[in-house]
Amino acid sequence: MSALQKLVDQFTPKKLAVFYTILTIAYMLFPVTMPMKVSSWTYDYVAQIDKLEPGDVVVWGHNMATIARARAGLTKTTAIMQYLMERQLKIIMISFGPASPSNFYKFMTDYAKSEDYGYVYGVDWVVTPFLAGEESVIAMVGDDMWYPGTDMFGTPISEIPIYENIHVISDAQLTMCDGGGFSWQPMYVRQWAIRHEMPMVNNYGFQQIAIYYGIYVQGVLDRTRGVAEFMYLTGFQGESILRFQFRNIGAALVFITVILGNLAHYSKRKEEREMTGVRA
Image (cartoon, rainbow, N blue to C red; front, side):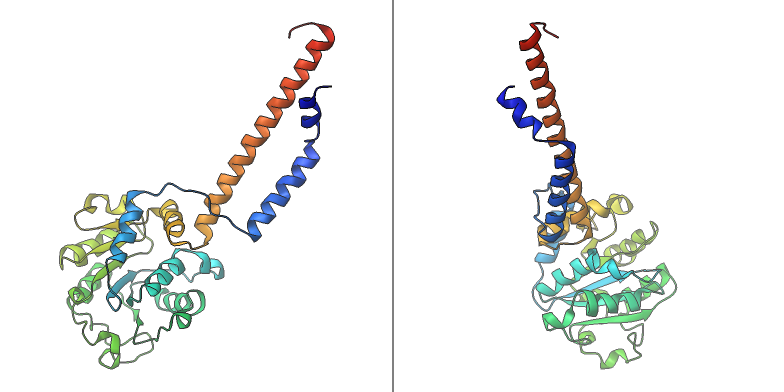
């Protein structure tokens, strides 16, 4: 028996299964980020945020329709919030969905850990109550940032420090649009980016704002892939990046198995030729 055959014979199906199981568990406990190709859209998105100075204000519009699940702490919302806080940017979260206020607040306090960044509610970030009216109310907020009247707790906006110098949306430095529904994304673009000539990034997907990209929208996270790229660039170990990493590991294991199988087949045929003198 050749040395190659002896080596290949060590890789039995049972041993491979054990090896792959151990490898998977090890990756879950100690995730290692594999290289990932990042799109220009995601680079643009990060660049727009990086342009801002500490203390600049980001207006984040969202129309969450459902309560976020507990595992959402590993999703893009937490990653984006932490990235904004790392750069000491102030955040005004505008709630255009019935679940947006509670979700925004939970993400900032429970998942993004705003207190760990020294962020104080009302001073560094704020959440509005649910504002019904879709595009009409998006336009109203753009014209008058004090339009909601109060924050989600009923505190008058006139008493909230973050609003002191923010009266119209153009007083902020960046707008951000997010949330479900294909029709919502162009609403933000029309009423904030176009009407008020505000820089804008999109957290939802390229397809919905493609016709505006590079003119009115300067960066986008294109669905799951874009979120994974953002997490890769920022070092956030969230669901999207882990999903892509596991996919890459799975593909690598398939290639390893195919290579080992071919080596075993080649070795077996070589041994048969040597024993019989017949070339199969």
